[in-house]
Image (tube, rainbow, N blue to C red; front, side, top):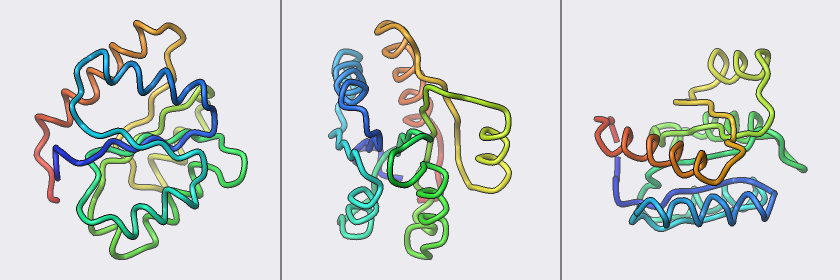
Length: 139
């Protein structure tokens, strides 16, 4: 896993994008940050980028294609599946059915509910990034 690769956020809410970006900066994450409001653009980026992202954060509820369907598309692509990119759902709405589907039917590495305070967002993102910086990974 390239621990220096970019952190991707797939989320169609521009306000959430700004909060996420600011929080990563405030906690001192040095990785490039790339935001995609549409899964089609994120998928194209993943297929054409040279190298590997560090982490993918994806909202479940997206306007055109759900985060679950986006992850299914990644898993179905042999080249992307082989990269084993850490994929985390980061969503406002969290229900047992969706969490179960994400873990049982997909290869995800985490499912987190969005925090409601800026300090909460910073704490959550720092914890996640710190974990993956220390984690061994096949890629």
